[in-house]
Length: 420
Ligand code: ADP
Ligand code: ASP
Ligand code: MG
Image (cartoon, rainbow, N blue to C red):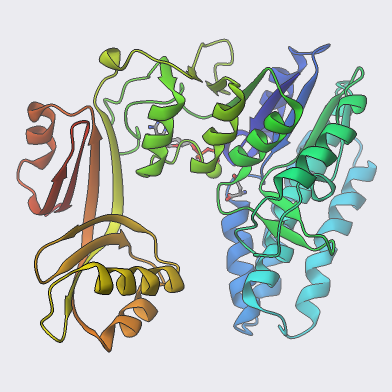
């Protein structure tokens, strides 16, 4: 039994639906669970709708209509019969958002977010399942909220592994007779049957949860790139494909911010020694990258991870005390309460410097620090992490940049810099 995951980029328009169907067709007769994300940039669009609704803006309905039309336009291209029941099904699924928008927002933002944003995956999976069946590729659609059990930490649902493993292993294998099983990535359900999401880009993680629970033979995530490259090709056009990576190297890369795989994906696979393949949906026969327990680290090229929109905060105690365990533990608790994730940290005698993503959580963090600390903030910075660095590679990427902070260990160097 295998698990395949298809992300938003693989089903962004009618042609890509056809392409995904042609890939899946090749695996007829195999036992495969298909995990599928929302179409293209649908999740971003649904986030905007949620925000507009929550802020009481009038355009939420218009934004929803645009998104709905986009889905229907794709359906019209895919199905010859415009009365196919999938049109009604998609309509009925979007109506759930219409109902929410009819009433003023009375619930907490994160809860509303999950109820609205999850519709993206509910709709996309119904569309792909219907299209595959229409193409005579038998598929059973299932609701992942009956499979992945989470707590009610909306927008970052924490998986209850025991219940999830039980539900998936009881429900799925018997369905895999002469048909594929297709379900939603990114979503889970609480014990009270409310919908949760697992964190942005979380569908890779969903695939890993299924593979773990089913003791799958392998997971394949289908991407728009040849595999895992040594850098994001959007920023590093000369990036090269890595044929073989270890779980450890993959975890390090994703921890530092490589967005090709969701960071939570690897660990469950590592625990059961399940290989993870990253392959290109535009060239499905190509080998891609395989991630297993061991790899020859000496053969790895330098691996670059570039994060933009970083902020460097220097924190100095107002009472002139040294940076020591007591104020460090206080500073960490303030970060944890504000939900700010630290990308890099360094301390001197009287100040503690932290690099983090600049987002909406930073302003409340700075306010919370103000009572006890003076803060100095630098914005518009980039964080470049290089694993398996050489001095030549550091020189190449640091040349002409204003370096604010550099941190080196045996395998990894991190540079906080201004691009100029
Ligand atoms: P999905 O369709 O599954 O959501 P993503 O767009 O999230 O796919 O992930 C694929 C993208 O990840 C690629 O288009 C690429 O720009 C980016 N990426 C970032 N780092 C890497 C890397 N090291 N190797 C390959 N792709 C990378
Ligand atoms: N659709 C979700 C997102 O864009 C989950 C995913 O694609 O992995 O974040
Ligand atoms: Mg994605």
